[in-house]
Amino acid sequence: MTLAPNLRLPLNGSRILPLLLLAPLLLSACNLFQPVPPKPNPDRTSNGELDPIQPRRVLDPETGTYVIIQNAPVERMDTIRWRDIPVNPDRIITSGTTEVFTGTQEPAAPQPTRLDSRPINQEVNSEFFSVYNVVIALPFLTDRFSPNSNLPNGSEWALHFYGGSRLALEDLQAQGINLNVSVIDSRETSEPAAAQMVRTNADLQNAHLIIGPYRRETARYLADLARTKDKTVMSPATTANDVTSNNPNYVQVSPGLPTHCEAITRHILQRYRPEQVVLVARDKPEELERLAYFQNEYARRQGTSAARRFRDFIVRDNATDINNMNVLPLLQHDTTVIVVPSWSSETFIYSLMRKLDLARKASTQIVIYGMPQWMDFEMIDYDYYERLNVHISNSTHINPLFNETQFFRRRFYDRYGAVPRPEGYMGYDLTLFCGRMLKKYGTKFQYYLENEPTQMLHTRFEFERVVTPTTTSGTENLPIQRFENKYVNILRFRDYQFRLAD
Image 1: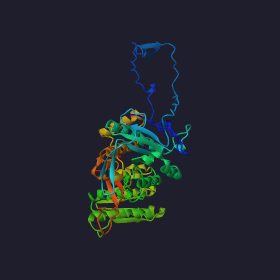
Image 2: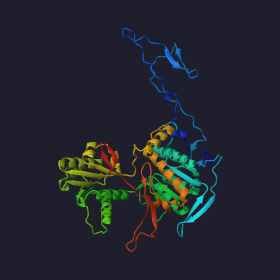
Image 3: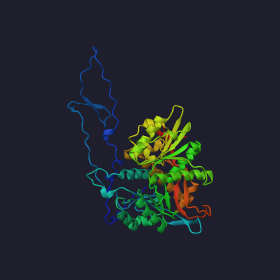
Image 4: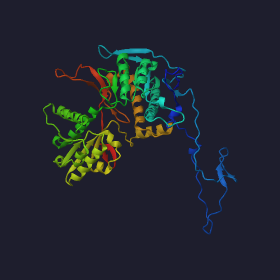
């Protein structure tokens, strides 16, 4: 592997990100963490008292024997002395830092050589190259970085994602998959700066594949670039469905809200009767709109729009009605399934759970389905989660018991001195998956995503093309709006932690 930092001058107005910004991930081992020699147990005298304190002994690394230090300091060590790690100006992330993963010792990024072209349809060809240009565009927030301050809020997402990506790039290199990787700050703190970057950055203009960014606004710029310049964008975090349209070059890796609601509906109907289900929402336009996702999926599974609808329970959005809501009419069966597509008010969720817990009888069971944001709630007692059988949807589930997960966790920690966050797993999974797809299917690998469902560390990839069906024709030959990963993990709170539901 050859690392070839891009020594071009940064773009106008850009800021550099010294590797010191990667400190949480790039901690190196020091003597403080070397194994401590075993301490012998002190011998006791015949009268039960300890022998006099002996002079301090230390291990001589040259002879391998212990030596006695007569005048050793005995003061208590109560302060860790930190030292600054000097920044190597040749190892920085700028507007475009190029890394070559080719298995060769070339001093610079090799130019891609076109090897083959395969038609996908009458309008699209997938190109094969000797090496592929890949851009990883993440919000490192270099414009907010100062050597004398802490890391900018939000940059850890990018650091962990990139840490996982680097491990995947090393694996791809070992498999003979050659990539020119440019890592850039996606400039997401300023929309004008992000727009200028997309228009002028040479790495983006020459990329075959772009992985990133984070925010919806920046994703729109990259999606437009993908459509007009015929590139592929894998968007790892943006879940909005209105980022782009008629754009088969845009791939949404994290499922959107409608996909979450559809997955919850399928999970419920596989286990419960429709009459047991109640949809609960506040009388707010955005929450009422979400109820349609569940009703539409129910109707789709029935094969007709005239199918029975789920019951719904609408609560007026004021403190009085929330505190006085009567939940007894909801509990008409031995098992009642409550679906709550709400997350903006933890107070509302807490009040609903408290009333349901008080209203339920010993012979009845309540099962609640909620949203991913519930994992971050702090007010609600987890006893309610346990007693009310709370389920949530989530785009990520990392099983700590899997051997592959444990191996990656150790590998990440050994490399960076930090425990990987979920985005570290995501960076590894997505980079590894994309590299393999480029090798196998070429630059238009997204057209083959539906043929490659794959279990990864942080989730499962089950991509589908998203089209807008019409009343006069089916979904075949319709324009592709985008590709989207449709796999959603359904988690159940059990034994005081979220586990993959049965």
